[in-house]
Image 1: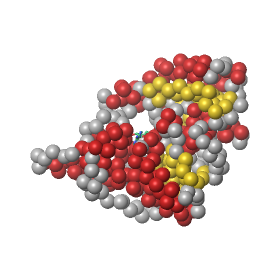
Image 2: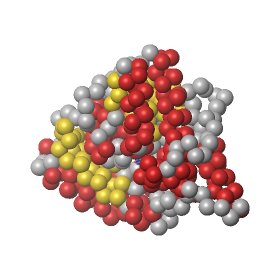
Image 3: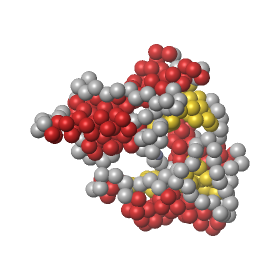
Image 4: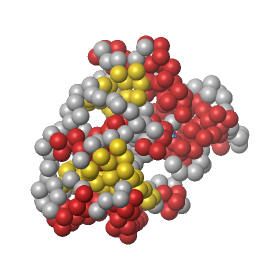
Length: 337
Ligand code: KG4
Ligand code: ZN
């Protein structure tokens, strides 16, 4: 069964055709990243306009590369939440029009469920498992009970891990996105050069807080500026990256132990981080747990992951009618359609 996936929640306009939730027949991505770099972050209006401009050609290319037409597609899956509302609306409306024109079922997909499903593309992974979902907007520990049922065990109380990396990168005057720049420059630095606390938050032992770490970076940079001293950016980047990865894995490990999971999974843009990948491998090896991480090409936003999750949502009967809306926020475990 072939599903056409459409993704436009942030600055990537993407379309893909995936067979039976696992086999990628095409995966096309157009990004407006270069334009946002000028502003040090995603400018929502620019992102929406670029989606509107290129969504038709991206979808056409995805069908062509998969060597199929709309007739060969069983259902159209589209990201409808969470994300930038102007961006999401472009994808949702395009998918609706296509579903109407082709008389196809329309399957709404939660973006973070899509990230989790990126792991089904690269491995024979099956639920249940414990997943660390780390992106620019979210840091969640999720108990994935089945392909379409999950429960949030911990989440960030303030900034997401990716957001903290991006903001810290900006403070260090590194190119956007900061997470990618920090990952690149960190191997040149000393990860023990700067001290960072491991923040404790009162709400749940599995919750995260990254805003304190980000403030610490700002303070280090400002103090050095005031004293007229030079700060070593590679040292600061390496120390900050270590602190973020340590925090992510401490709670993930604790949750896995407490809830008895032996199958661990990481998903989301930050899963591309080389330190997170290496340290998670070590942690899982120590406990003899299995670890699944997406292939690098499926870590960031893409539509293959949306088509994959769309397949499983469709099989479980999740179909939207023509009044489907987009939502800037939505819990991963309580979908509203
Ligand atoms: O999942 P994603 O592509 O978009 C959202 O859904 O937010 O995640 C984007 C985030 C950004 O914060 C970016 O800095 C981060 O993922 N990221 C990384 C790396 N590649 C992307 N962070 C650390 N190391 C990387 N290699
Ligand atoms: Zn994402």
